Image (cartoon, rainbow, N blue to C red; front, side):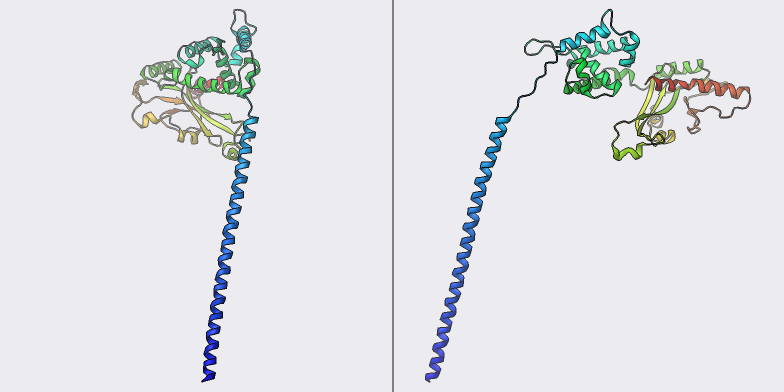
Length: 348
């Protein structure tokens, strides 16, 4: 009996010690969690203080070092006077042929553009600033745009002569192109109307081609700043990237159709497949025309082309190997008349 009691007493003592051990371990774990929480709170507080101090320091330094916009006195009045004396005075320094070369148009055409833009577009009207000083003249703004278009030069390059900044020159170019399209597009970018078609038919008949309304061809335009990743699809035999311009021109060098932007690897046929030149015919919106050839009446006009174009009823090619006087005469006249579009490309 005494042994059994001793065993029970030892069991109870062991259980009490085990319970005490568990309580100690729980207390230890709670203490560790409390230490971790306090450590995390201290780290977060220190980081917040450091971040706030750093941010305030950056803001203060940036505010202190903020620079004013640089002002360059370009003396724009002298730039206008120089331009006027060089090209637009009664006795200009440079003759008409140099004006035509540098502006890519006759002076009368340029002055017509100047008058139209100054009358209809507020951006090109010369106004006074807040201190009553005259701003840039219409001549300076339009000349800057024309020089960038004619020479493909950077906007900053016109500053030294015309006395206007780079951002202003770019703004002049944007407003100039938008205004020209808006004010002259209805007349010069229109599709041929019945009166135009009749005039073209009359010209074609005078040139021994009744029913002809122009010549179609394409040219390659070198793309100097083509992205390197695109050069493969825009480069052909010349090893320089180009863009293709397809155009229809009449004898007076009026371009009635222009399709520009195809990759330089394409030829006439590939460009023609993508071109909208016959969209009006496909959609039934083309004006009706009639003409007589050898006593037969036709109602579908045609273009003169070179030999690569398909043999459609809307294309008339030359004869590659003419046999006999008639064929030789036809080939000679066709090739001479088709030069209208080549001359138009030369003007461009």
